[in-house]
Image (cartoon, rainbow, N blue to C red; front, top):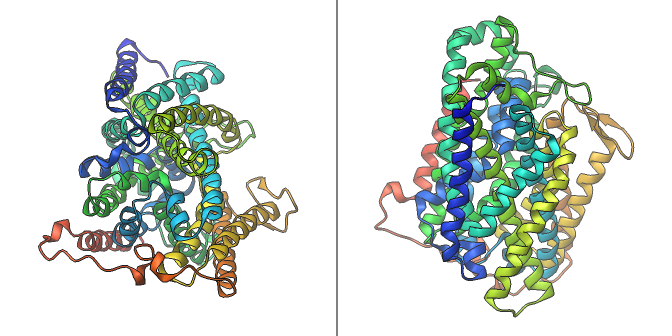
Amino acid sequence: MKLELIDYLVIAVYFLFVVTIGYVLKKKIKTGNDFLMSNRSIPLWITSLAFISANLGAQEVLGMAANGAKYGLYSVHFYWMGAAVAMIFLGVFMMPFYYGSKARSVPEYLAMRYDEKTRGFNAITFAVMTVFSSGISLYALAMLLNIILGWDFNVSVFLAAGIVLIYTFLGGLTSAVYNEVLQFFLIVLGIAPLVYIGMHKAGGWHGIMQNVDDAKLHIWKGMAHASTNPMGVDAFSLVFGLGFVLAFGYWCTDFLVVQRAMISKNLNSAQRTPVIASVPKILMPIIVILPGIILLALQKQFTGFELPLNADGQTDYNMTMPLLLAKLYPNGILGVGITALIASFMSGMAGNVTAFNTVFTFDIYQSYIKKNASEKHYLYVGKGTTIIGILISIATAYVARSFNSIMDLLQLVFSFVNAPLFATFFLGMFWKRTTANGAFYGLLSGTVAAAITHGLTTAEGKGGWIANIHTFYSGTSQAFNIAGIAFIVCFIVTFLVSLFTEPKPENTLVGLVYSLTPRQKDKTRIWYKNPLVLGVIVLLITFILNIIFY
């Protein structure tokens, strides 16, 4: 990949701009709440774009392009089934609890609904997950700099981490959020021309249909059995593992995205944030999945579009997007495309780091180490934790090198943390009899069940560290099934333990449990400000898309 001066200038201007945003916002950061929660003052359009952009990191832009080449159109399930429904559920049903409780984080809500040990367990597992996800983004960015500029991988890791550290350290969450909005537009504008050029070169949709295996051009065909579709997943594992457990577990309980709605100015804005974000979310496959399918068509028609092998001798699908940029973009536009990828990686990393420092400061440090310190003290702790989060992310970046699809790795991480957590939330919000002991031992058993399942199964050479009693057709199938088992175990254990332990008094659960919380009615609200109406419209569109691409 040969870059000219104009390409380097585009990249340099972007780096300068993101650091400047952090420097400008530094003046407004005076307390720990300003640094970690933006003082709940961010406008709706900013929170909505930040909500989707926080998820639009390296895992999505690089990982979904890889999935497009590896699994074809089946990858859109991560959006239409694995995102839209859960995002709407979050906005309509769960945000009133999060926002109304005044909780500053998801673990803090768990402390209000259950107790401190449940909060502590979730805070620790979430902290581990965020730095792991941040490391995946850092790995992807360093790999890109290595390929584009020829820089040593190790140098690239530390340079990329340093840039993210500067603007998150200076401006905190506010800096991360405003940069996420910038990065959203950069990603769309930087990659959309690639889709257009690639489609034209491949001969349009007709050319794709002629040159791509028909098995990769459907989303439901062949789902009767895991062996009859490229994703290696059967319909039940897909619907239950992805559509219910992982989707709701991620979008409804992952503080990384929930935080973007929690910093809204009011409850209505907090509810509409994920619903509005679901609109571009269901259209995002055009930008992030279609390039992988275009690559498959180009491989049949031209030479030079073959993907390289990774260190394990497997096809490195993570190289799908960089390869297309190198082959299809001229100089100048190439700089914009590379900047778009860099923006996605930095967005994902910064989002995870800001979620990590908030949870560590409020839910671990303030709760268990120093409870009544000054706001200035927590500001310093938050900044110090930002540095620690970056350093741990550097370490986890090297773990990601052994996976040929970082999206498979990410789904595996989510199955350990978010899958059992959703069972805890689901029971806690809709069954007032759920107890603190039930929640804690349910979470613990669900996480352990995920670890044991991974240790007893393999997929693409991963897992089986206890024994191999079953081999899945793909890493995605393994992650979906692990998630389903973790959810079921957590649900059953939480339910059974709750039956034999004492629940909290009902008067302490008002605003935290659905049946005990008064419904808020706004008769003057016009339809386009009603999150339920907007959500129904999005679901109808999603249903139609599923029929069209059956």
